[in-house]
Length: 130
Image (tube, rainbow, N blue to C red; front, top):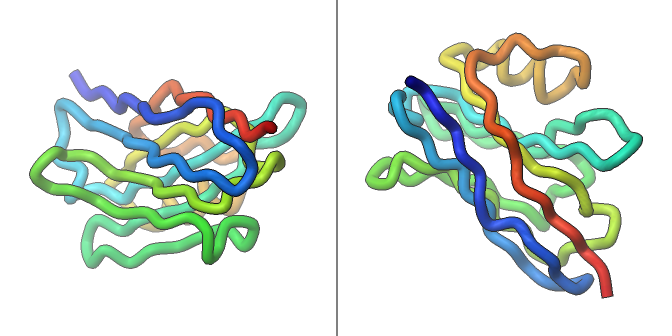
């Protein structure tokens, strides 16, 4: 059974950092394209970042460029999202999804109504507040 489990969320002050983890079981993440999403209450889902399983290429939403870094660790079968210089507007539930097709991953990242990726996690809550 495939599972994606997110962790690392919490409460952090503005300007602080968090590292989120998306740990997989039942599949090898390095063979998949992984997207981190976030959704704040009352707002649409936003694609935050994507890492390609084939060549490690990375993609970022404009709102997080220069502050967030996505990376993969094959030894732990985990994709991380390092979030620096956090702002109150980064407050949201963050969740990951994986799919073998990059086209689907990019479409999900850019279209909040597309749910065609194969595997989804349930998320971890990030709150940025003083």
